[in-house]
Length: 306
Image (cartoon, rainbow, N blue to C red; front, side, top):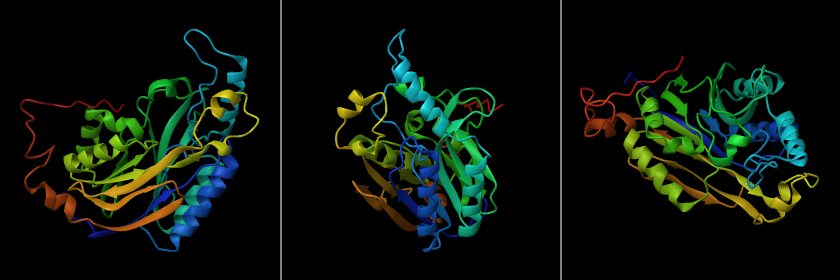
């Protein structure tokens, strides 16, 4: 590992997006960035699909071999609220990163600039406004009726003074080879924008932090049933949802698998922490999954990023 700075201050935003509303979700993100910036963080992290929200519980009229026009209307509405990388929303976020002098990680529904496909994506902005986009490799379950498989941006990492930073979105972290692809790039901070408020996920994030000897940033969101637009066509499915659809559980775990910040449930907040960046290297004394604790003569991962 190259020499890195010894401390990274992080602001982890657990907040509720404005569902199906690109403009309002962006405005809310900018408000949270401004609020977090008052504490002078080096890195500000948002959840999965913060723009324009994660439509939990909806099915957009899909069933096996069938679909409905009402579902198509809701999907087109979500499509219209999705973001084309590099356009006005990105410019606003890039300007916010410059103003905050911070790296910013944010999940968004990406609308391809050429095709009609959406992607579940995450962007990391640098303090100079440049950015890298990661598209989710394999949407989970019925997410596949909304977002396509990544066709680019598989494992980008952002070089920072605290080492390489990368992200895997939600259940991508259950893909062992995807994790190794990031470990092979030497990441010290593993960002996970997600919508996992189940208790088993907490065991997962502790395991990955230990396995990768990195900090695991668990960026979850709050979603309430009354936040869904009242005029969506898929009203019956929404009526069946609990009052709090996603409870959050955001937290930060160190390379030992210990909580730096405990999981926070059922509220919008910002978690601040000063990460000891000596740990990712120090913890590799006895276990380095892609170094001295690997057997490249027996096991090899080939990653096709073209």
